[in-house]
Image 1 (cartoon, rainbow, N blue to C red):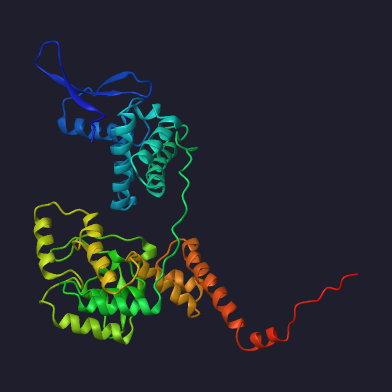
Image 2 (cartoon, one colour; image 1 turned 90 degrees about the horizontal axis):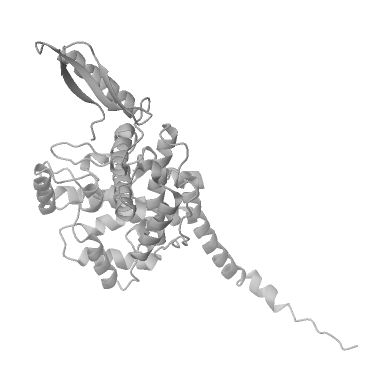
Length: 395
């Protein structure tokens, strides 16, 4: 972090004594040297920290600050109010922004810089959705500066996000799910893919939630599984979720039986349900070396995850989809079996009702098709036989 205040000494005229003074830039861009009129080092360092704190809180905010320093300053001010993953997204977006426009003063950033960044990212082949995510992270950083009185206006306030169509909700048919489960059971892999897929289809848990599940999360007596963040301990690595994503989910009798059988084959004192022992040992080695990050707990728990899942789908003769579509299938099945939107929202861990409503609409579309088919049979079919096309007479 850049030092905003420097503690210096000034000798007396006779050279026998000295006093401390603070050296920093004031709000008008002028250099300030404030004498403390004493030589008490502990007191001087305390005064320095207080002045630095005031600078970072915006009371004596320096006029000039490079974007790299602006980022560091913002992350310090925010502290643990945001998840580490959110900090990472802000850092990543700003670093890419710097490569495009340079490490200029944060107060010189304009809408044109944002538009240049947007086009550059699109030209590099980033999807519109990805570019939109980066721009939202940048906008948030500058908006925080406005709220802290560092800026009078957000330079990216009016930036237009790239147009993109949201991905259609993909789900698996019942027979496809059965084939995938059979293929997962037959494949030779240290990860129990059959149990993993079955839980995704019945609980709607996300990939990261499943891979970071520990045995303490499973209550065999109550037939439930708990989704909760993990602390950094000797046995577990740090993994975070939003408060809205904390939830307790019911387990079917089949799921309980699968997990009980799986646990009986696990080594003693082995915390994670789905991380294979060999992979767990590797991760523990990486952690001891200090190279394991919070993002790794989301992306690197299991090697070749997507490749293996695609292999299972190919073996099951199923169209290649994402693992996340198993969750989509679970949520739409809940709706199809009569559960309400609020109930699905709570079980899914959605913080925004709009997200849940998308799955409701997907099921509603399916209901329309099924209703049409139902109307074409039975009484609907009989009524159709009695109908005749009107005959128009020529006058």
